[in-house]
Image (cartoon, rainbow, N blue to C red; front, side):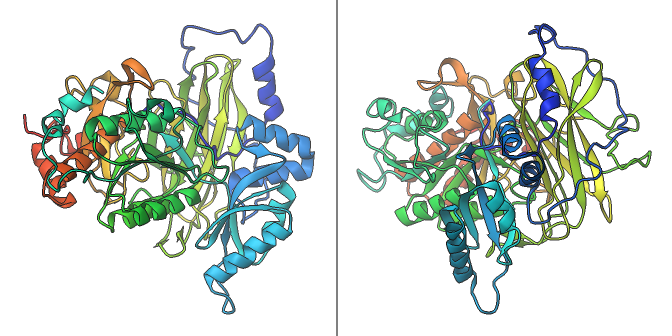
Amino acid sequence: MKKSKRNPVILVFGVLALGVLLLAPNKLTLQSVIPDAPPPTVVTVNPMADVVKNPKLDGPLDSLVRTYMIQGADAARNLAFNSQLSYINDEIQVIVESSPASTALNSYAQTEVLKRQIQASGGTVELGYRAEVQCRADIPLIHALTQNPLVKFVRLPFVVVPTVTSEGVNSTKANLFQSATPYRGPGTGTKTCILDIGFTGYTGLLGVELPSTVTQRSFRADGRYDIDVHGKACAEIVYDMAPNAPLYLVNFNTDLEQHTAVDYLNNEGVKVVSYSLAWYNAGDGKGTGPICEDVKKFTDRGGVWASAAGNSALDHYEGTFADGNGNRFHNYTSADEILDWYVPAYTLTGVWLNWDDWGSWNSSSLSYSGSGNDYDMYLYYWWGGVWNYAASSTGYQTGSQRPVEAIAYWYANQPTYWGVAIYRYSTSSNRKLELFIEGNSNTVEYNVQDGSVLVPADAPTAVAVGAVDWSNDSRSPYHTYSSLGPTHDNRTKPDISAPSRVSTSTYGNMNNFAGTSPSTPHVAGAYALLKEKTPFTMDQIKQILAARAKNLGSANTYGVGSLRLKKD
């Protein structure tokens, strides 16, 4: 799956400065050659050294509120626009996390009180789930919520992205099983869900590339279904693999909407989920977090969750914070404090930072105990032979907040290099840092491929799927992006690999559908097909597929190998 951009979580400054970059005449012409890479750089100025942080707001919202208070509503709108935030009728979609329940109220009652308070203050409540409320609120209300004793934290929804970067039926030998008599008789196909962001135009494929009837449900607050074609393309592959499986086409937009969708799937008796999506900064890389909790909830009921490993092998960095010169900026090397990557013209780019200080995971409240180490992040663009400041993410970590910062999305109308610097605001020890980059067209500087599997493929019970070429299983240049293990608690991932670079009616022929996105529905379809045609349980099917997979080498690259329903 080549990555498209959705639901940015961002913190940005320097709008006017970047406006000069975007609008300057004649100087910013399109180029067909990659500009020279910037030299190693030591950061000499911290443009946000005097920022006063709000401990109840994530970095992007803190920036937005501060801009509104100091520069006014127009400046805040410009900031939201430049960072691709959803800013409709001067409202932002946010998640309000409730404080631990008082002795007078249980967590459910407290959340209900909070919902009524938000509505009474002019906000629009969209969804409540456990101790969290999804709503739309204007900036003054967002600021006011931080003064409410019932509120622990206000944040943007987590960022979910498709994993996009068929011939797979025959290459996996699924065709050898499709004509077999169903073990449990006619009409016993395995209920399978394609859980995705959108299914634009799916009705035009009914009875052709999809079954004549499907179950469709949108869990988006606005009820929209026509957001993206990505889910439709994945559904085509599941149908190709398991043509008798009753299909559920279910979409969502935020983490809370996904939680509600998974409850629905469990109630419907769905047994296989095909999940060609991934999340940034939504978990500790050890298989915990609110998104991984959905996987556990589904698999605990006997289901199989096939999850794209991600396309981040070439867009990933890890390293322990180091400050050899004492200026509080991270040294990627002794001479370089800015990690850079190349982005083509008019291509959005973003960067997500987390560090290993999540604390303990509480599945009841869907929260971590939080970080007491505080790092900040700064985005620069290379122009005129120097690094120019573009944006920052300076959220507060005082012991209860997540150890994350994020900046997305920015672009220029010429090919350019972008760079990121990491600043130690307040820490008690040097922590291991992790960066994920979007929009990079080559390999990020100081690339670390290991450990690049994304949430929720890192979940222990997820079947994490890597990408291989459908025609020869080789790890060709098309698939070097496929995320690698191990997880942060040193478990092997992915679990299996499956065909990519395939043809679909949605994306066209000529092998246009690439990434771990098309790989995942091949695996989901294999489980659905074998469950229908054989007497085996899902656990037994997993063992069968592991035994029949074509071994390709490193387990943290390919898992057990390339998907086969019959051994070569």
